[in-house]
Amino acid sequence: MNLTGELLIGQQTVKGTRDPIVAINVATGERLPTEFFGGTSEDVARACELAWSAFDTYRETSLEERARFLETIADEIEAIGDDLIERAVAESGLPQGRIQGERGRTCGQLRLFAKTVRAGEWLDVRIDPALPDRQPMPRVDLRQRHIALGPVVVFGASNFPLAFSVAGGDTASALAAGCPVIVKAHGAHPGTSELVGRAIQAAVKKCGLPEGVFSLMYGSGREVGTALVTDPRIKAAGFTGSRSGGLALWKAAQSRPEPIPFYAEMSSINPVFPLPAALKARGEEMGKAFVASLNMGAGQFCTNPGLVIAIKGPELDAFVNAASEAVKGSAAQTMLTPGIFDAYENGVSTLAGSGKAKEVARGQKGEGPNQCQTGLFLTSAQDFLSSDALQEEVFGSTSLVVECADAAELKQVAEHLEGQLTATLQMDDADLDAARALLPILERKAGRIMVNGWPTGVEVCDAMVHGGPFPATSDSRTTSVGTAAIFRFLRPVCYQDLPDALLPEAIKHDNPLKLRRLVDGKREA
Image 1 (cartoon, rainbow, N blue to C red):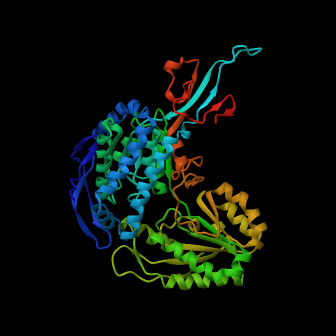
Image 2: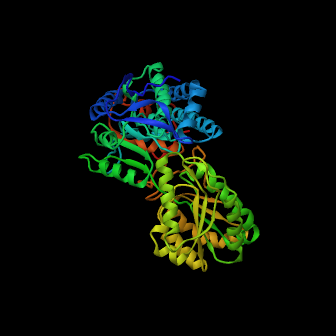
Image 3: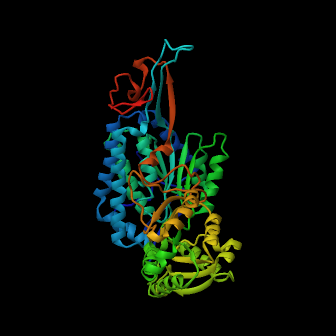
């Protein structure tokens, strides 16, 4: 494994001059080899200059060229082999199987976006041909397509060192849209980031694309991140992380002379609603399954089920008792970083010290550093409604059960929730009316609503929505997972009365791309 700790600016490697980032083996506390020196505002400016110079060429690459580029990135990542798996395991503390699966997901979504690009539906071509004889006024020829916004900044996430990082969904969807990408690597996995960054760099060269299509930056503190989102050549940004970090960058993006879209995925507690008939029929089974979901990835999924809301009674007691036993049997798990572990411990202490949440079970204590204990707490609906502390996300494997007096109080709690990535209904046929009453509320609160499943795990496919109202995301109109993510980095342009020789391929008269265009209000065959 040959790591240099250098910035990747276009096709160049540049030694940073700011304080170094040193990765640790989070399971042992051991420092890992190689220092990754941070970039400066001058390095950022160079990367942005290259991205801007590449933009007009890259955005007009053919659909086949761009799709092949995405596939080449996937091939280059796979070609790294075991070195990538080993480094990612060491930097994240995640098990080998999880990292292997995440590599597969990363490469899979790159190839999915390649398929999306080739299909061309994202261009959303609309044509209203000229009607010179129309009365009382003739109609001019109007043609619409979508074009790339411009260079995009992507901030790597801590909890998915591959799938939400350097070559993750934000990068894949931005490149698919025709946007050059500059990635700000996450400090928790700099070596993993370099390996993947070099794979993308190699793919750019192999495909003969302008070097500014991709760059990779390191930086501790806020200098690099702020410089990136405020550079006038950057036209959008994608972020996955904490609410405080996301809002700081969002404010910087909105304070520019030209504000830009800032797509931040931040906090979500992903409420689960076990409804009465389901609780009565399978409350014990449900309690065990809930804890299995809670413990997945040490609770560090964006969709971790951090809240259970149900009507008080013996059925809920059975659920809580089963969940408690499962929690007590839960082994401690290594968290992603010492900082995340400290934040988790503080969150659990806040719940325990609130005076309004009762601890009902804790998991096994860890023997190594940065290992979290699973936790389960219980509160009343009225205490939950009156306490801001109980409504804050605890990022890790701790959840809170909210006991409601009746269906009316349950709806009140649901209405009180902030925006969420997911909402889950556990229900049987007899719960249909109760579910129907909740559904309009959940539609307003969440980006994905599910029945009789668990929120952890996000399928990468056309129909997936990974987004939701604030603070789940900064823009509830979008998704960061699934092929619809491409639309975050596009904008419509209308062409009026342009001669055919001047028209882009997608909207030429003879439809050379063979797209199913909307022509005069009718979809072409």
